[in-house]
Length: 156
Length: 156
Image (cartoon, rainbow over all chains, first blue to last red; front, top):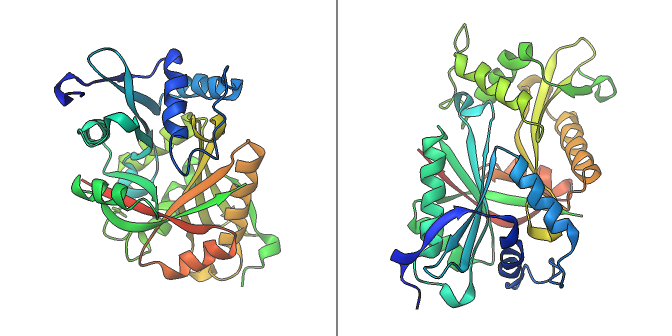
């Protein structure tokens, strides 16, 4: 049992990529999209390098008291002209390891992201959650998010 | 009458900021959020400078045959680990000047963004459109977007 008090958040490192991809793949929607091979395809590490080089992007992980990575979240803080030029925050790829759910880890990650966005002058935090993820929608509503928009996607 | 054949797309310049903000403000949702003053608040120009410095972000305008700016779109191409590390595209702030609507300008902007995203290796283009914008939802559906997600927002 992971106590929420023992959870710390930190920036992801290159050696976290495998466990992050495992969390992304451990999901009805994600499993078809990822390639969880050993070794992991190089495209994941190239993407990680691009994330590290982008000052607008923070890929965070939640670590338990034993140093195991049990959650992740990507926060992008993007400049834009609307809302008087305030930057906008986009939250993506929120995942918590299956054996650690319902313990407040996702909430801790999202609340960190909201506070970080606010601290960087954002007036808006946005995210897309698949229409089938009703539990995720309830989770975000509990944290103050409104289901105000339709999230439209085009996949190639 | 603006002929779609005379419309060209180009990167926005600093001297386009006023007309872009006018388009953002000319909207039931945007009017309350913007400050369309003369001179425009400096925050808009600071945001424009941040956009220009971010290699992931392209703020585009549509220009008619007389050089007037009649539309805009912001495209962000963001690295991320999911989908095997393929970058993801986010479209924001799509606007067409009121007197130039229904002539294919928005479609030209969005199709440019989709082609650019594909060319940069994205497998997903996503956007949020307000639940009340039914015409926008039909427009994106016609261009191949699915209303697959709930777009959740938190405003400060």
